Length: 442
Image (cartoon, rainbow, N blue to C red; front, side, top):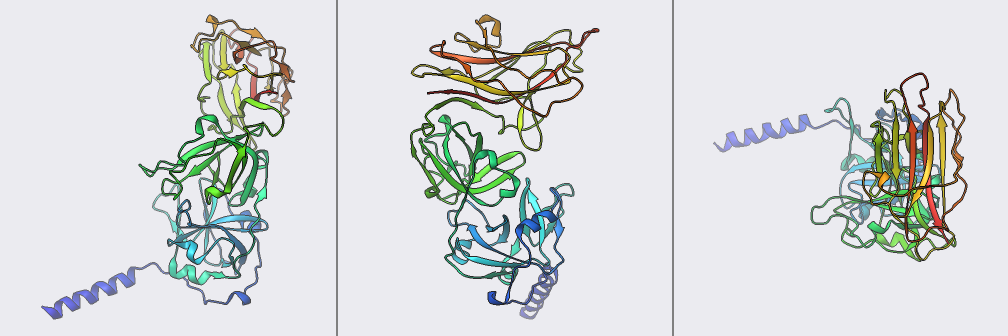
């Protein structure tokens, strides 16, 4: 019996060894003998979004560790950055911060590794899991292989985040350590836990700037600081810039990277009462933002979110709707004017295939929040609206100008009203796009 058990154990061990994945483990080299012969910028050029590519050349990159799992906000991941860009390296190991501290110089031998992306975020792995033929995913680099291809260099190298504005965020900054100045969490996201500790769920909070746009700050439910509270003030935030689909995200290394102790949106001498650039919405979807109303009064046409490669915006037209009359309202959240001075509205518009439909902007101080705007009194504002782009979609934005709201007190609402038609000989189906809706005050 004992002999049979030993024989069975030997067979099982042989089977497991035979069935292990085969990794081409390179011969280790000391850091001093390695020289980088390519950059992360050149590596990014090899990758096509949604695809996977095997690296077959003897390339070496050299960079610094800018993020690890020290606070558990990054899981089995190192973020490596050189002077040209950054990349997420998937590693099948934990407590990476003990082996690869922030600031450590790392050489990576790329031959045999694979490039891929997750939601558009560039990653490096050891292989490809094709169990889902539509969405293949990278396999993490196993620990034995990682110890060979990732060669450690000098430690305690200085890391200086790149300071950028929200308008400068682009794919070239993916996986890079950045600082965004003069920002704050939106009011509803202040003094909130960074993540859902009880359910161990990640949470997105929104930061915005004094007329700078907005971006998500995403925190893992496993992060060591998940139960801490987001700050109330204005200041700067540092983190790793990432993307997921159309969403722009910042991931913190630690809460010490958040310094928001100044007065909210006071640094430039004005207050932001309303800012919306639609960048946090999914393109192609019906426009739905907390506090906003998207009301098809007549003709069942809504405002939608559309996008170019550079930006997202609200859009509407009456084309192909076969409705004799289209009237649609896009109404802002309540805007508090009490205690302010010099309030002014501005926004940008573009028109396309102009054949007579109109877009106008109104203000009300007694809107009741219902889906029947006609119950309230609305006053048209003297705004400059794009027009005249016949037979083509304009590529140029037209600014409305600074529209004074000084004559209004208490609480107000801003409404964009579209009117068109798509029947008969005189169709009026002009398309309009709206972006960067802003109300500022002194």
